[in-house]
Amino acid sequence: MRQTCQQHGRTCAWTEGRETVNESNRCAVYARYSSEKQNPLTIEQQIRKCREYAGRHNLRVLDEHTYADEAISGATDDRSNLRRLLAVARQKPRQFDVILVDDTSRLSRRLADSLNIHEELQFIGIRVIFVAQGIDTSSEQAELLVATHGIVDSLYLKDLAKRTFRGVEQRALDGLHTGGRVFGYRGVPIESATQRDSHGRPVIEGVRLAVDENQAATVRRIFERYAAGDSLKRIAINLNNEGVLSPQPQKGRISRSWCPSSVRHILHNERYRGVVIWGKTFKLRSQETGKRIYRRKPQNEWCRTAVPAQRIVSDELWNAVQQRMQFVNELYALEARRPGILRARAASSPYLFSGLLKCSLCGASITIVSGCSRKQQDVRYGCSMHYNRGRGACSNTLLIGRKVLEEQLLAGLQEKVLDPDVISYTLDTFEQELLLTVNHRGNESDLMRRRVVAIQKQIRNCTDAIADGKRYPSLMEKLSELEQELADTKVKIASCEPREVRLRLKGARRFAEARLKVLQLVLNREPRIARAEMAKHVQKITLTPEGRTYIASGTWDVLGAENHGWCRGPESNWLRPPFQGGALPMSYPGTVNQLKDLRASACSAKFDVTVL
Image (tube, rainbow, N blue to C red; front, top):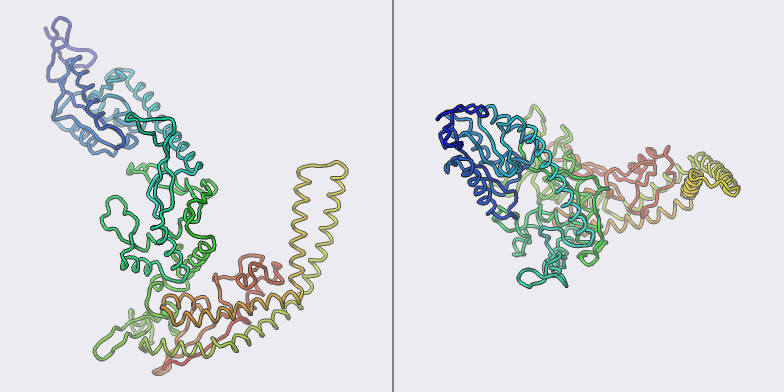
């Protein structure tokens, strides 16, 4: 007896009330598990459950249409075998009529993906049966049930992420390791005193990092060499040449060796100074690719924990490295990708004046434009604009040998600006100009003294109100602000006194003399170190062609800028190194630009050197 099934709209054979198998009962099976840490046997278990369901309901599972995605999250539909299943479902003639899935979460844990797949297969005319929940998409309630279970599955993912985050966060706060390899340390498992596993061994409750002295010696050496002036590239090359063991490479990389990025990573890692930072990033899944991407959190959301036992370098060495990295970043503009004082590739150049030389005719860099030959045994400097774009862009055709330029220019600098008498004369001029400026700005000192009187009167009013029992929070906060302003204003007034100025300038003189000795020493060392030290004193050296010679000119900053851009706001502490953090006199906002110009003019020495 044959009868048309009203529910599914197809012809079925009925025998004693039971539906028998025909071509409309062909089934495909889809299975999935999420993580490599899960048991791969779950795929077999899901397929077995689907086969058992098919046997009970007279459905025929096609072995060639069994699809499984292993160790892939259900939060994305970018799964190879799911894509294959949907592609086959779209084919004509139809290869199967039903898709069996053990659970809605196996198809997707994202509500939007679940509904999209449901709608597409419904349009094609293929049923999906979720075995565990008993949902058949051919029923009228299917869409509601799929949406309900899809919401539950997506909420499970979010709840799981929160619980995982809290667990790992607690480990970080307890000083335990949260995962990943860290060069310089070894993992020490923490065994439970009471719990045992199935083999009778103590349960591992966590892992604590301990300093590996062999690797720690390499870490200290990297910090010391960078602080001494070596570049990241030079440090990496030397470590590789000496066969020093490098960090274990990432998964998928074969070579194990040092590179500039691995050296930079070590120099930025605060764990080496005993501070563990966790939670700097969070993961998001891209709507386009389905892949997880990392986004950086604000610093106030980072989890910082002091772990003194993991300290490898001292605070002094750490601070020295960070100061040099800041200087290098501003010098070569590595982070902001903007023009720096030197070009970024000049950082590793073997030539002493790379990045400092400029053409006076067009403003372009003077670079190495000619190599060695049989007749010419040395490389030669020339205008890069003329070399790359021709005489129409710049008419400077003069070339000069590297050794000739470096020897004569360095000798001229040592004679005209690196002489103790020149330094002393420049600082004497600066002192005279500064004292003259302080005397001429006496009106601002009077304004600040009147401000002190006004502040003291306001403080008395506040204390009288408090004595009368008016201890309002806003009143206490106002009193604290007034006391702080009074202290700051008194410091500014004291710094305006000529005697205080002379004391501070003595410190500047000692600083300049010490820097001169350091510079005279490093000029005979590796060019990379000497060039970085010179860049603290001179931003550019302009070469003007005159016949067959160059006239090198520029301005030498006697005190040297640890940071280019000495003025950092209204406090104008633009001589921070010699004054050890104290602001210069007359740091009132109105004097900032004047003092900046004064330092640039009176505390600098101009030079002209003829290079034959």
